[in-house]
Length: 222
Image (cartoon, rainbow, N blue to C red; front, side, top):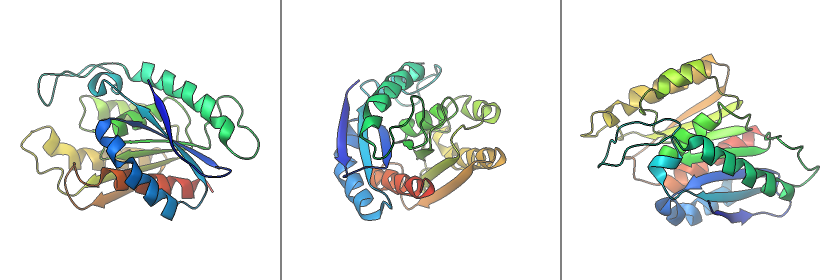
C-alpha cells in the first residue's frame, strides 16, 4: 500500500490521512488548493493508494452492487497499514511528538467507500476527527453495526450530494435516509456531527467536498 505526501506546510499541526483511488488522485490538486485557502492551521496531507477498492475498504463481505465484483473484508488489514503510515508521518508534526497511539491530531477521511471505511475506522481507533464525504452508508448491515459501535472520534463530518438518491440502483436510492440515520446515531452517541448537503450527484466535486470536511475538522482541533 503506497503512501504519498500531497501537501506539507511548514510546522504542520495536523496530519490528514486519506485513502484514495485513481479518480481521487486526480482531484488531490483541487483538494489541496481548497485546504490551503481554508485551513485554520498548517497541515500535512498524506494519500494512501488503495488498489483493490471493493476488497480493501470494507469490514465484512457483501454482494456486488455494481458489476460482478463483491465486497471483501480487508478493512482491518488496511487500517493496520494506515496505522503504520501514521506512526511514520506523525514525526513531522510540530511541537511535542505525539506519544505512540495518540491520534488526537490525526484526521482520517475519504470519499465514497473510503468515507465508509473512515467511519468504521473511527469506531476502532480514537482519531481526532473523521471525514466521510458521500460515504457508502447504504452498505449491507452497516447501520446496525454503527448503532452498536459508537464512534471513538469526537468530531465527524458527513456530506452528501443532494441528487445522489436519484439512482436506478435500489440500494443507492436509500442513501438519503441512511445518511440521516447515520447522523442521528452519531448525535445520539454524543459525537459533534455536521451533515452538509452539496449540490449534485455522487460524481461531482469529490476533491472539494472532501477538502471541506478536512477544513471543518481542522477547525475543531484548534
